Image (cartoon, rainbow, N blue to C red; front, side, top):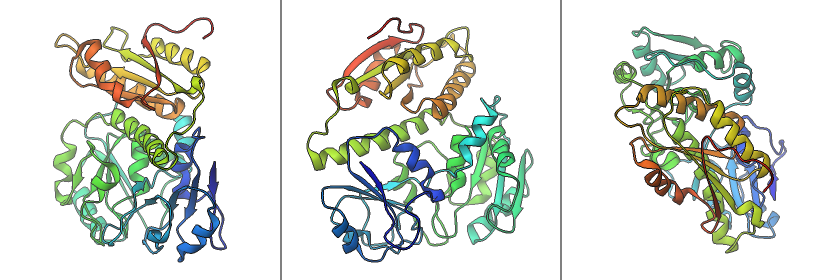
Length: 380
């Protein structure tokens, strides 16, 4: 059961920074989770409210003023202040804004990204952003819109279209933490965010704690942003897909530490692994889509892992990776139960499967093995 609750006179939910979290929690039925905006100043009220073991997720406290360490339950927190003596058990992603996904759903699959094309629109309100703007003003190949206030630039649908077209999105820090909505909007749009290593408040080590291992470029010196964007952008879709899947997996593990053995019905314990490799029809994915949809129809809400083998020397890596980028984008918007994995190097089907088996959860799941061109027929 998921409870959204404010402990002061404010709405219980629907804050901007809860948008991505709400999407990530869809379909999670086994744990007790409390999501609360962190405007409270006394953890005893939360402790009194919770009558059974609960995973507490704190949002909307960028300044780090709520005493989360007073809560007698596991705590995950958005925009953690790593300068405090206490750290939450895990970071909650700040996430994208409410207009992000509706705008992207209107746009459809993005065109092939143009290397070097970049976009930034936002306020210039702190020293980190001034440094970034000083560097970006000297660069060509992109779009720079500096605004006076928050959301005072171009309309949301045009803002997201510019990200949808871009390869790179510079993301200088917010006023308090390195995290910004922009970073997650860029990932949703299939662009590569360039992260800020710090913020006006410090925050060294923020990204390893928040993201774990990741392929996103992180800058301590914004004068280097042009050099970063002169390179081919990394394929970040499989990592982003894995990040979201790991967030859900971490919920499972956190709840298992509380409840020993979370209950799932036997049919929910079926995980499908769909193997894929380069074929002449790439970057189109009609064949793969038919196969995925055949599973989604019969095993609604169950986890699906698309396991892409790496290309052989004779295959076109650029065409293949453009196919994977499009699959990641489509899966992110339309297939919430799908995780995309890419081995990067040619391992044969057996090696690729070996890589993805640790992604199956719970560990005793039944596994349905398929290939990308073998849709299910009939009933299970």
